[in-house]
Length: 281
Image (cartoon, rainbow, N blue to C red; front, side):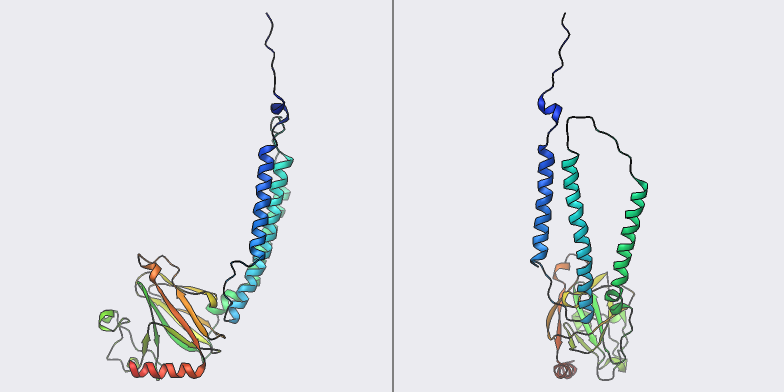
């Protein structure tokens, strides 16, 4: 009786290069499309209107270059590995890792990203940890589902006392101003934020109910409003214009409707705004 003869097709001996070539091609297309999109600035944000915003953009640019180079090299290396170690019809061979190499690239990653963080510390810290100048315009920002309310101290330069028990938006007292406090009688409460150009502004951000957020793209400034806390942030806008304020926290079913506007106006127009609002309060 003749023994069975084992036969192998040519493909089973040589393996198949098709999947490896397809994967490498897809990776090259991914890299090419990504580079074109970023190089064309197709999705660039609006220009910043503060010095801190420009620092943020510079830090973003540095980080993008570093991450972009690493991304391109990693994808090209993956495409090379897919071709170099493709199926050749032979059993897989186990390769142990290189501990020294792993330590080197781990340390390199730590140094790289800690270095980027140190370089970008001012872009984040100046607006939040730096003390506002003595002549800064102080404005209180109160968030609640799903509106922003802004309060100015009025001619006396003092904020009046707030009483949570007096909060009643339907009767015209959304913040709970105490009518018996003389300091609050000239406070200005408005739904839109107006600030003077080229003058320091300090915002005192607070929330009446849940966690909200104050975000203006052109300021490159985003700060959560947390119940029970008053969080100061400061900036100096140097470009006149109207900019959208939005909440970036999922604060409830009406989250998508929570928005207001920041009006940056010349100093004379700002003074006129305060006078008009003081008369109407």
